[in-house]
Length: 467
Ligand code: B12
Image 1 (cartoon, rainbow, N blue to C red):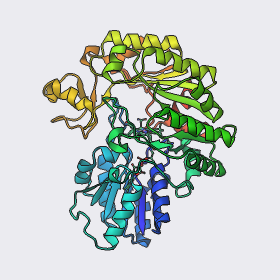
Image 2 (image 1 turned 90 degrees about the vertical axis):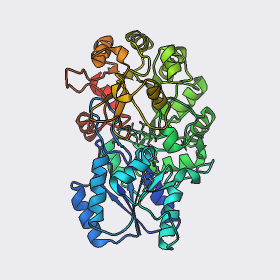
Image 3 (image 1 turned 60 degrees about the horizontal axis):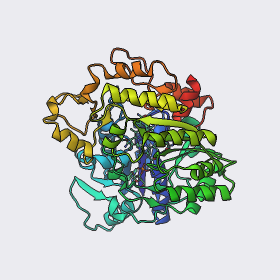
Image 4 (image 1 turned 30 degrees about the vertical axis):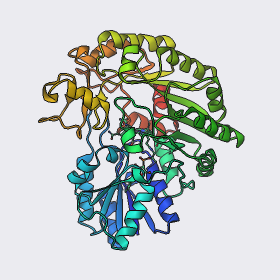
């Protein structure tokens, strides 16, 4: 028996898509699989106690999605809670514990050390957990020490194929409490943005699924009554040709009239052909990785788009009836009040439905941000580095970069530039705790709206509540 446990209890509830795929693959390989979903129970400790009172698995897999909430004002760190869960499980069973997940993959070694888990898997879990399970059952030599990190990236084929049934977790309950359900069309990203950790957890090549497989899966979710999806790719349109092929298959099956979907996208490539195909295929909202509208900052972030591309992305969405959100990243290396103003003024002028203006860049190990930080001298005395913990700078804990050139109260500065424009999700003012930003971590406003029937991407639900 392989027991998979979802440890993400953040609200609104986000379905553990990864566990759905892993369970489907493990069952196909002949394993008995159980899922214990700590997000869907009132008392996670009690749920673990009662499960292990009646079950004695051979391997336990914990999914760890969010290391922190990646949100400067709150800086919530979830690793201690994971360590508590590992400790509780240890008291209930002798089965070995393996941890995996997108957040886990960024800090694999530290998390295994901190929590005392037996194994960790970086990257895709489907094949690696099956091999680990079989090796343990056959008493083969798996790296038998406590800090064994297995690299799932070694098992990642160029062409990605995943189970399509989506029947291993309670997707219907997640839909009712989370407002949309995730689906992947590919994994990995071959872009090189200086701040992004997706390269670490998902790999640096675009591993695409066949459009037929993606459409089969969408139909299987539809058959469960789930008609609002969120594409979980890093960027749906990288590569653009694959995005178009997925849309064409959706259109061929007339899925566009039966389901609505949202996605993250890079600003380029995006043209009239893709915009129109996306709308016909059911896309109702795009959240673009805009980052900035200052050419200087775009170059710093290593983005491939220009401010003009932002203008055309917004226009194409409007022409095709697609809601549009521009996600900004304010406060990166070299950001000044002038570049921030240039960005905010530009966004106001091109007029997306909404724009996210959070402050601060989470610094992840293995990204170019670490080199930027290193060049600036000792991080402990670097005024660009912001954190809420004491002692030495430790990237494992929420650590952010906010350009000191934005002054003593950068959030106030950004809010002043936004000047109450309701299209923006503003940062939280340093001197004011009113929550005006769009943190999806324990967001009661969103939770209540979804309970009352709102569906869709969270930025769209919040936008509808406010405007
Ligand atoms: C889509 C997405 C969203 C969507 C989710 C929509 C939906 N319905 O699913 C929305 C917009 C809601 C969202 C919200 C948030 N997100 Co988000 N999101 C993503 C994104 C792009 C994809 C995640 C995903 O579902 N992937 C697809 C699944 C199949 O992959 P997976 O979960 O990684 O699972 C695989 C492996 O990890 C592994 N695995 C997983 N579990 C296990 C278990 C075991 C035992 C093993 C062996 C392996 C294993 O195998 C799986 C299959 O191969 C990632 C970035 C990325 N490219 O991964 C960020 C990401 C996960 N999000 C992140 C964050 C911070 C958040 C928020 C906290 C932001 C906020 N403050 O509001 C919220 C939290 C929401 C919540 N309740 O959990 C961060 C987490 C980083 C961190 N610091 O911890 C990421 C990595 C983005 C980033 N680089 O900053 N998100």
